[in-house]
Length: 206
Image 1 (cartoon, rainbow, N blue to C red):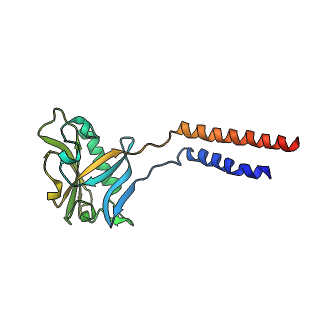
Image 2: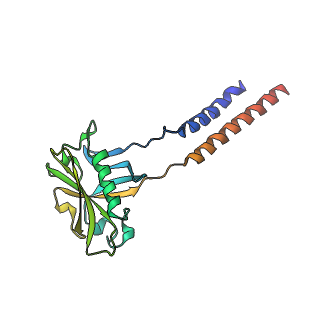
Image 3: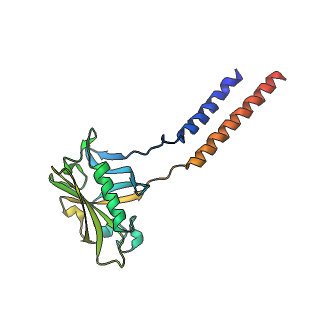
């Protein structure tokens, strides 16, 4: 009977250990969809790190804290912004059961054009000019291979004035416990369960 009371603890230890088995904790992109529109995504792997993205209307100045310092942007150079754009094209702008987000650009929040939608991804440039550097991830109707381009954009231009453009606001994805931390937790629970069970058995035998 006493052993049954230990089962929840043993199960908890096994579950925690299972969380850290190599290959079982693969992060998959999660699309944010509201009323059939694609508003962003989570768990995008870019350069070995995970990011979330939200599609936002407005100007670079209003969205990115003035758009006048390198620290305003999560991507520090053009190459990193290209990586973010490629992640959108490869992992987000897809046709699936969730929606035809590749074939129908107008299903992306901020874009009403049925022909194309360009998500602008700002990156830091030095010195900061009057315009800001952006990588445009273009999702075009009927185009097999969507494109990435780099250009300068006026900081105060409001994307809400465009039918085919929106800003991509990327943020680091919330961190999860490291492998070592989870292993330590699993080990601790297992040890606790073992000694608690032994103590219970000794009490019964005494």
